[in-house]
View 1 (spheres, one colour):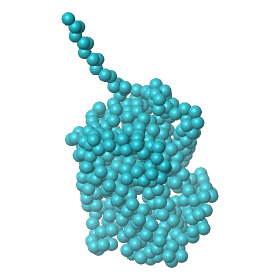
View 2: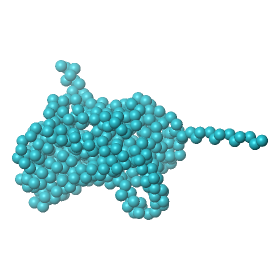
View 3: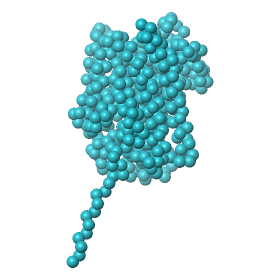
Length: 482
């Protein structure tokens, strides 16, 4: 009598103790995702041009990063850079973005090679304190940085309504409209594969609206001879530093550097890759996506804004002695006599509005991911939607921001300290053979990756050090003295 065959043992996953992937596109459209992966594998050996044309049809996560960083921080830093220092700092934000993209590319390599969610990877393969500090710092920064988005959105919205209709409305009315719109857009992300595509498409429109709005202003200024293109070239390629590096000029410079990549952006990016269902076949595609979807729109928008304000405001009576009360709305009004009311206020204002709305939606999205990760929830359904509402308190920025401004000082200091820690965590992950296995870079590739990540870490440490010396420490001394 034949012996019964033993039952096959259940197959263990390669990473049984780690959460892998996200239940979004992989769950909703598995066949389409499998087809895309097979197509990527098929074109891997084709010429670069053919690969890039294929990648161009699949852009998305990079635009989300661009939309998140193009907010009140980028608008404010660009506005002050052009108004106070002319064309001098045109190099700063593209440089900061390139450095940030190097780190994001490394994070993409780690995430796409392993499929492991970064919070779990840092918690179990680096140290729980780094993972929790990364998550909590990202959430706190997101909530606090939400206030100026609504403050700027409300101010620009009021100006646009006044321009178009002549009506006078309160900023909080604009805030309510923005909150409803951004909630609807954000919730579509967790509603299915079609929702993910709608969300990403809306963000693309908003990002390019920002670019085209500022481009229209600069084209008009150039047509009337208002732009010094020689100074523009020097601003990009001579890497000039402000004369008062320890004073207001240094604050503007480091503000521009710090506005490019924030701690919450670093948290969000790998989760958008996993939400798309991307894997190791998408690694080259992700780098192309960062270059075209993140760097290009950001560099264009911030540069055009600096050029516009430098061409019209720099060196004029429109700049206050201390430069602290200048706002984008003021800049738009100053541009009106040169570019015309329609372009000077309407187009410029629409660009700022697009920046704030896109950032608000991304803040809500990353809050949903952070809270779900910390509580062990899957980022879908009602709990995910409730989690995305965590930063909605920032709506109060339309009426209370000037009274809450002091919160940004300790928060920025704390989050500035946590960003280098997060970078160190990802550097450890990239070099940990136990975690990366066969995907760990070796030889020349390892040297290049570590040099790039080391540069990103150094820049974040310099930025944090400058912030502590010029802002946090004087504030702390004032509190202790009081």
